[in-house]
Image (cartoon, rainbow, N blue to C red; front, side, top):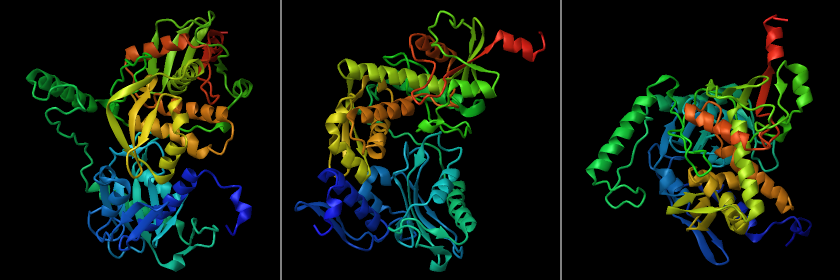
Length: 483
């Protein structure tokens, strides 16, 4: 009321309360000894009694304050981290098990002497600690407290004091990274499989059926055997309604450092610029062009590219860019026609969100349903996903929701619904597409190429990157000095 110049910039009540809730979380996490309450329109949203044994304060493995805010499902998959006594950079708190990750970094909370901060170097150090443990484009959860003497940093960098300047950034980085890596070296990071109970609705098979049990055992043994093969990769079958399975068994990282998710539009390159710097010619026509009909000879190269024989030479396909284009076009066609077909989940899935993510679900609920996704409030910051787009039926529902929310949170200030919808389709297609470094079976590779032949715009991904290059016979002849 006393800052009227700001009132016109306020968003909806749902959005503003999401910001308030996020601020509340940042205060409550590092101060578990304090009883916090948050009310909205006379209704108690949070009532957090003191939680003395928490990851941010005590040398114990009780994550009760995290559980109070984000639910037991998040808390039970955390690993306690604490620096050795005497280390000038003290780090304590919790990070997620590698099996529990997200497609964005919004569940990463860093506190410096009890104050929430944002710091890219700490985010990078956290990512380095998980190198080789998470697939490209996945982010760990973190609730970490850094304790150092006040003379080792400067808080007068950001008006809100959310950014700091380190006196010795290398020491902070190495101390932070070392604490997490040292803990991982002494922790069993093998994945676990929860036992199914009789009548479990999460699995269609009867666990008491000996035949079904034997088949399940055989599949698990086969999977374990494949895990021991070179590269630790598992062929990915294509069997979704679109002919493209979007389910990976399991997630993995072949050490590829290239980031495929959230690619910036700044990377849009013109064909002319590429041709001036490379002997490879960018294809300017789709794979269904009569001039370039792929032959039957198809092979995957380094789990990243697909090499095919075309009439004029050799075609090299970026598997992620091509798959992303196919998914994007199918989403777009569905929305333009009658909306995207939904597929109801046999068992609705609860998903714990950050305050801002939850606020976005409430504000854009109708908009989200337009792409075939249904998510309803389920208490606290938890939503219940009851349906997903049919085209993404084999993607984990949580990942679909987070991919949809990403542009709503980052580009939500755009007033045009068409622009927002475009960003949403880009995000969902990019997150759901096969990644660089993901091994595909020969049948899957062939199927991907066949689907591309049906797509008019298969020559570029939605972000503008080329999805196929052609090396002509003439160019090959010149390289081998045949002419």
